[in-house]
Image: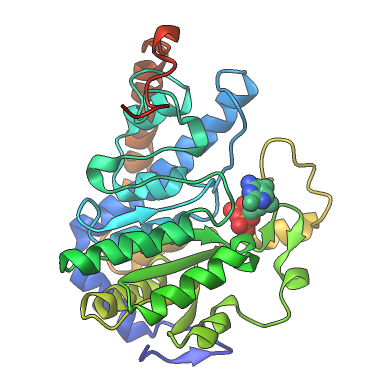
Length: 342
Ligand SMILES: Cc1ncc(C[n+]2csc(CCOP(=O)(O)OP(=O)(O)O)c2C)c(N)n1
Ligand SMILES: [Mg+2]
């Protein structure tokens, strides 16, 4: 993909990061940083609400993975291109531009939410903006992206489909079938494997006998690249190149974004499969602090303005919560709506 690589991980040169940052511009960079904080704050609030019994079902938090969500979604044109994601998807939806009020209402199962409370934490979609939603079936979205890619190809538009899935999903049959088919049909799909090091309690290092999941791309004759998933600019760079390639009719790319899930798999995880030291080590590589520091170094942000951004985010979370709490529950009489087609 044209960049220097070290041990298989795509490295972003200092020169290239400055160039990228300049092309994004200070105003947009600050918005991206604010979205990162918004994702973090939304999920911290989600965890609290769950503990208070204010949500239904389970939930999966992506705290620590914010740079991957933003890096990937900002590299495509949300609302014009397509997104398919997976169960750990709050960050993807918010990075795609989801409205906080509708996100919070959906999370709390309210009628005013994105899916009128039917989806909850795990199945948030916004079809009008081409966010085709998450899938509770591990790897469920991957074959769908092939269908979306085929539809784009048949309509001859310059759209692309970004499909995000976990490392666990890369060890399932649908992953292989989808990559093969997308490759032989030359479809405009970006396969983004969000490698957060675990699939439930199964560590990547025990589940794969290769150094990088991206190596699997060679079996299907498509490019594969591994990137530091805690570095917004690195993810943005790699996914932008994959999108450009797809738009030029050159077919799919497999991107592996190396990141880390700070919290448990879901709320019922005692995390006996990893050490506190490991978690501490990854927490020290906070993707948000890293991007904020980069913006400070580029003089896009003054350190004292960080507090203003954070308090604006806190206020927006409070507002979204007030909106969701004052919203009605779905009417039981509408329970069959959306279940059967006429
Ligand atoms: C087909 C299928 N098998 C098993 C499960 C149970 N399950 C839910 S999440 C998960 C692990 C997924 O790991 P990964 O793909 O790495 O995503 P992450 O949870 O790390 O974001 C499993 C096994 C499921 N939902 N669907
Ligand atoms: Mg995983």
